[in-house]
Each structure stands twice: as C-alpha cells, then as structure tokens.
Image 1 (cartoon, helix red, strand yellow):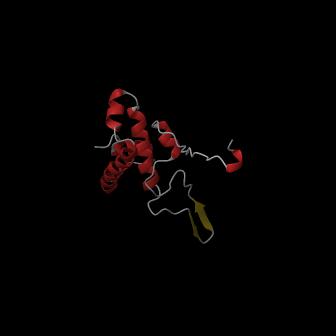
Image 2: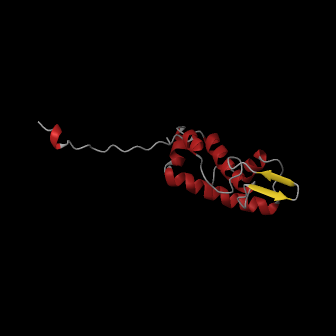
Image 3: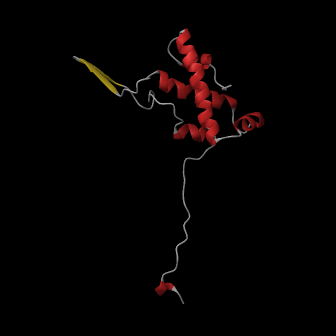
Length: 126
C-alpha cells in the first residue's frame, strides 16, 4: 500500500476528487510507489528507521499523481479561436515520474559519473 492516500492528493488539489478519480488516484499512487521502490528497494525500512521522512514520501507520491491528473493527456498548450493557454510541464507533465529534485528529497543524488582509467601513451612511459 502506498504511503500517500487519495485524500493526500485531494488535499493538494484545488477540489475534491469524485469517486472515479479516487479509484484512478489510488491505483496511480501504487504505481508511484513502485517507481520509487524500483530505485529505493528498502524504502519501508528507511522510513521505519527515520532515514527518509514519511511525510516527504507522501508529498512526492502525491505530487507525482497530481502532475498526472492535472494533465492526463499530456497537453502543453491548447488554442480555441481567440483563447489559448499553456500548461507548465513542471506542474502538469501528464506522466508519472519522479523529478530530480524529488529524488534529492528522498536522499538519492542525481549525478552519475564514470571513472575511466587513462592508459599512459607511449611517449609518456619511462
């Protein structure tokens, strides 16, 4: 069961969820937790030990789902006659994803680097 609940999502949304939305949100919260646990398999142990704050996990899971339900079709802009608007991908990406800043909140650094040995060139050898 996900740490966040449909009520956590509704509390961060601008309106209450209807029953159909609650069902979808509950399922997507489970998906959100699977994505997090794919990278932090011992999430439950870290939350229990206090290494990762449970409230932070709830916030990240709820925000992941909010980005999806605010823009389920993934539109970035729409125009109808003289009226047009643009949706910020940071707020409503239309995808279920953990952003790099959220990984940081969960204790995962975003940088990856490779240390590759550099062979000595023939003219560098003694």
